[in-house]
Image 1: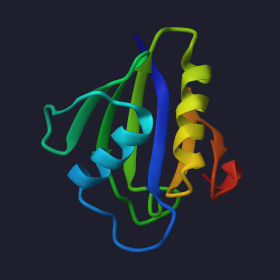
Image 2 (image 1 turned 30 degrees about the vertical axis):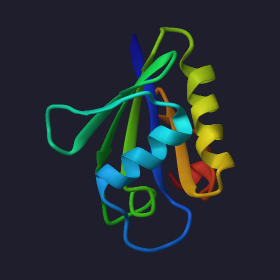
Image 3 (image 1 turned 90 degrees about the vertical axis):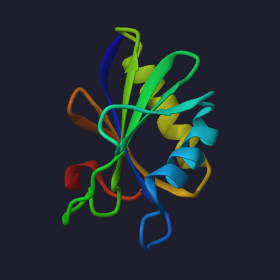
Image 4 (image 1 turned 90 degrees about the horizontal axis):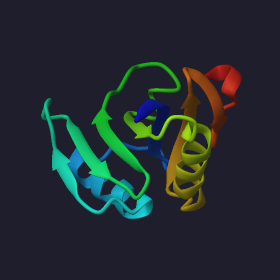
Length: 120
């Protein structure tokens, strides 16, 4: 599995971010993750989807895009399917209207719901 897909995620409404546990349950429900498991660092959660594995962690910074997207979701999927899987997961989160999302493919911003990629 390759892991060149990263989603930066935050809430669409400004305010304090929820706990990682609560946020993980919300994201898991949208992405169809069957089971959540705490792994390694107590700030990381792992979940398995049908064609990907996701790690979610709380990683806030005091500048954008991380300020408004304090949760990082690293995605591992089959080599060659990263763009397709990344864009699908981005859209699933974006379509709810509850999240701000930035999709990074191979370290480059591919799309964003609230910021131009040039600002990410």
